[in-house]
Image 1 (spheres, rainbow, N blue to C red):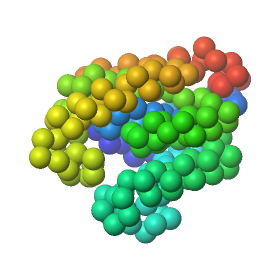
Image 2 (spheres, rainbow, N blue to C red; image 1 turned 45 degrees about the horizontal axis):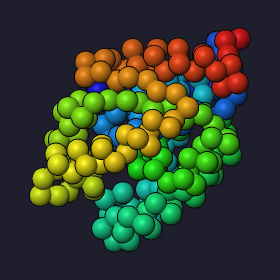
Image 3 (tube, rainbow, N blue to C red; image 1 turned 90 degrees about the vertical axis):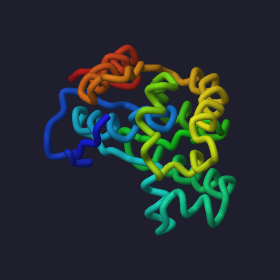
Image 4 (tube, rainbow, N blue to C red; image 1 turned 135 degrees about the horizontal axis):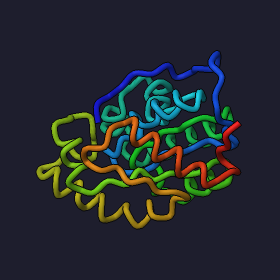
Length: 195
């Protein structure tokens, strides 16, 4: 998926929808959580929130720098704090890091205050999207594909616990993914309704 830019706050425009709960996008690195999240937020005219971006802003460091300096456990602790804060601040679309949903505390917070949507993509699609990027600290290994496969095998059973799942095929456009997510959300009137 190509990155697209959207205004994160389109509050001046009127939406055709009413969002009752924050939509939390979960899934593997490369699933499209940020790109789809931005486009979805623009479509619903709600704020777009990104837990990784919030962590980087608060720490004044990149995620790879945080991993290198403080370790993954420290990062996961900060991630939980940020997700908890974002879930109560305002309703919107929240993109989370690939490992965020692995923590039971995070899953509980998301279930209580929002709705989780798993952007499901197969391993080959994910590899094609992440293999040329050096921004994934967990893939800085001798065999990044084997690492990605191990993460995939470990995380998919947990992602399957998400409230909703939307398939992300290799050639699907961001707009089509937004349409799929909206359709899934409309099955939950407690989350999203047409005005």
